[in-house]
Length: 86
Image (cartoon, rainbow, N blue to C red; front, side, top):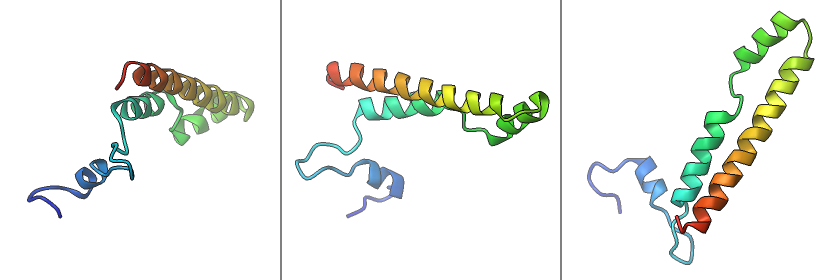
């Protein structure tokens, strides 16, 4: 049952696993924020890099290293958060 004023997002965030634990923990939320803050999501930035350099090598490098960096940072945040009990 939905509470008055509750949004679909609020309802989804309160969902629980079969064992009663929350679906999204604080560690999960923090790691997702870190990932999306660091990963290269802007296709127009990659297009400008391509236009300025004249090759697809630099945009591919930028996309790859930013995604790997974001993943490793998110993994570190998640592991630290889990170790701290978040």
